[in-house]
Structure formats: C-alpha cells, structure tokens
Length: 313
Ligand SMILES: [Fe+2]
Image (tube, rainbow, N blue to C red):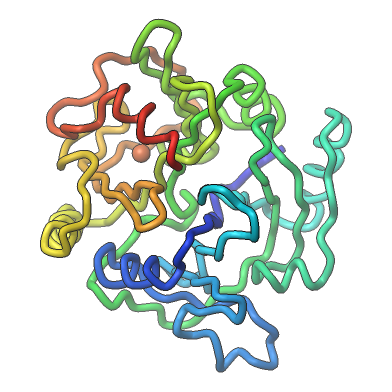
C-alpha cells in the first residue's frame, strides 16, 4: 500500500495539562483544535478536548499530536496510536484489503471515529508489537496558521516528523512496515551484539519510523519535529535549558539523516527531538549499514541509556 506520511501521533500521559504547558511554552508547538463536533468548532481551540486530552498543531492541520489521559488501570504512559495518511477512499480500501489478506484484524471506522481524529475516512489495525496503527484520509485543515513561538516545521509531503519505537519482535515489525505498509529501509546502525537501530522511509523524509532492536520490550522512545531553520532549534534548546527540562541528548548531528538536533524528556517520559537540516531520500536510495551514529554531540544518547530509559516509557 502507499502511505503518504505520518499524519498524527497519539500518546497518553498522567497529566495532559502539564504536557500542554511543555509543548506550548517550551517546545513551541501550538495548541491544536480539539477534534469535536462541527457544531462546536468555536470550542476546543485552546488545545483542550472535553475528556482532558490536549492537542497540538505544527502546521495548517487542525492537530498533529494528541496527549490523552491514561486509562483506568493503565500502568505506564506511552504510545496510544500512529496515524498514517493515504491518498483517499480508494487507497484506504486497498490498505484494508491488503491488511486483511495478510491476516491482520482491521476495523473500518464510523462517523464518530472520523470525528475523533478530524479525518474523512479511517481504519484501525495493530502492528506486530500491538501498537495501534490507523490509516486515514482527508484530514481537517485550518486557515492562516501562524506559530506563536516563531517555529516553522517541515511537514507537507514528508508528514509531521518521525517516531522511534522499541521493538521486541523486530523481524515481524520490520516485515509489517515494509512488506505491508510499503516502507523501505533507509539504513541501520549496529549498537551492540545483536542490537540494531533501523530506519524506514515512506516519503522523502530520511525516516518516518525507526525500529530499535535493543531491548525486549515495546515502547515509544521519541517523536521528532523538524524545523526549517537552525535558529529555531537553538531557541527551543534555550527554552528547554531555561525551564530546567531534562536534556537527554545534547545538541548534535546524527551521521545517517545528518539532522542537527537535541532530545529532551517530556512530562510523560517520551522524548522529543527537535532538529534541522536532515537529508532527504529518493527512489534511487539503497539501504546502508552506517557507523558510528553521530558526527558530533548528542551526548547522553548511548545504547545503554536508550535501553534503560525505555523501560519507563
Ligand atoms: Fe530521531
């Protein structure tokens, strides 16, 4: 199937309000338009949904990142869902048919499901790690988006950014994202004996999904947003330092996507990477085995720290 890009991400947190302050005031995301009934579109523009969820936008889309309250009995926060965009209704039906043919349970979303994500059509499935994967088309967009912190994010045909996931069953997960969803491997690092970090693209962005085979659990490690100017990264870094937010990787440049970025810890544990300057890839790209992982910087981003930190995510 043809995935256009990562359209949106949902995570959950013990305190979405704390996340709202972090995302808005420190990272520089904007409060999104909560996906609520069209008759009430004048509400929810402060990023807050009626159930305590908070929503963020980074471009003209009404939202891109949702932070939901944890469910009763839920032990730890983490990834709630990944939303992948397809071109339209015909492509959604192809995606559903291919998933079903491969033995994956697929549920077609109804009008309420579409409203909950502010999209026109949606289907739900899970990847081999149990992560909720959503396919959708027709996102709601808004007029005259302006970022309140002077940030500008690279989105468009590259999607909202990327996510890196811990994968306890790497081979099955890689087969799902490549064989079924149509991703292609960009490159991988070997970070230890039998440990690899693997990057996959579905559009020009170097990677949209990273799968980390470093530890025997499934979790989300980080969400990356890419700025259009290095100064935006620096200004966000200054805001993070001024707020006393934990920096988990100092400013640095990865050797594979060449992004200059830093990582910091969000209030729910999932790390946020803010970067600039990543390379893009095209149809002539072939997978590479790359080493080492950084040209400079990113101090703190070791395989041991990644694996250890993931236990709490
Ligand atoms: Fe990243």
